[in-house]
Image (tube, helix red, strand yellow):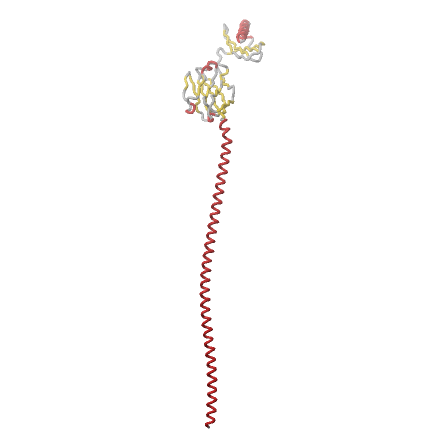
Length: 297
């Protein structure tokens, strides 16, 4: 298909040359649809040259261009988002547009998060790179001649997730594209609920342990209070016993004093009776004495 297109373009260029190149600065011709994009330069006896482009616009466009077409390019990422699983190998795809040989180019894959070189290639040699990627990256050189800048990362890790810039320098021309890599860990996703459950169980156990310690301390304080109350009650009981002993001693003393008082009272009553009896006797004797005196008189 490409040869047919090249033949048609060559024929058109020949016709354009024979019919005064300068009189038609721009012509369009219908042509079959195709996804191939090619650029051609024709230079004959005339000082002008033509560049023809065959694209999917269903037209072949012939336009004048300088005698030298600069090799400008862009870096394109076919897939802006790449996913991988921990431990797998992953390839980050980038390519030059239009396609050109990249063997002599300066190719740098850069981790945007740290701005460090994941892989650095120049003139057929691999140069310095970040320590965490040593031995784990490879620039697929078999595609360099076709403008492919694919980078393989072996045994990807969760820390490899992030954005990567593919920067190409070729003389004064420079291009850049960004690819996002997302690394998932199914095992950690499986383990995660167990970790959550374990954390919940540990939290509950710690809470239960804390509550137990709190209740134990509270019970211990209550026990200390009860012991203090019991000691105070026992001391009060001993004080009451001492008071009862004192009261009993006082009561016994009072009883002894009462007995003495009763004895003294009895003695006094007896003495009074004896005094009264003695008084009566004295009165009788007095009367007898008086009677005797009267008789003597």
